[in-house]
Image (cartoon, rainbow, N blue to C red):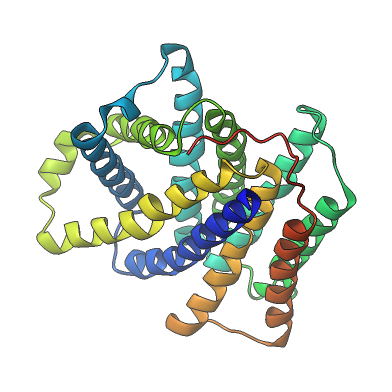
Length: 300
């Protein structure tokens, strides 16, 4: 049963991230800078969680000093890095190109956990990886060269997003074995917030004199792209292996393409529909072949 909890939570997170990508593209068209959107959404999310547990359950804010490097790695290189590089890539290229490059991350994670962590590479897992990558390729219409566009700089940003997302999955998984969902999230967001406070200082934010409408935008982005989906994803990591989690997350580009088609005038043809079905099929394959005896430590 806990396996299903993990898959459902990560699928829900992917759905929200897919919608958030289209929302972000809309706001970029309104001349919002990717850096400020990324910074404010993680800062708001950290403030909400930290203040909530400070009032309701301070025991969840306890952590071991020896784990600070792990929190910094997962929070800065994982959360802050993947968020900024992905959104910057969307602005420099388009959603389709950014997604195709970023979702080489499942391959990176699979190679790492197989070679370094000696995790068993099963045929169902490999098949699901191939299905999901093929599905993304079709879903974004990558068979049509005109769909993929952007500068080398933009593609480089998307590749960095893939590396960062891989780091989050691997480092975040280690944290799930030591802390509850909420303790881990508070300090993942805290590490990312600390990093951004040096890049764009609190003084810079104050001097920008953002309007009430701007803060509404920041809060909306924080809820749908950080606070809720990361809570779901991190919860899912408590229940399934990082390699399976990141393959399940490939549902995100399917949602992003559909939402871009519905709201921003994107395209959606038969082959893209087939691609979406392949991604969903990959997730179902993982679920059907999951073992309840996998050595996964769960702290809720």
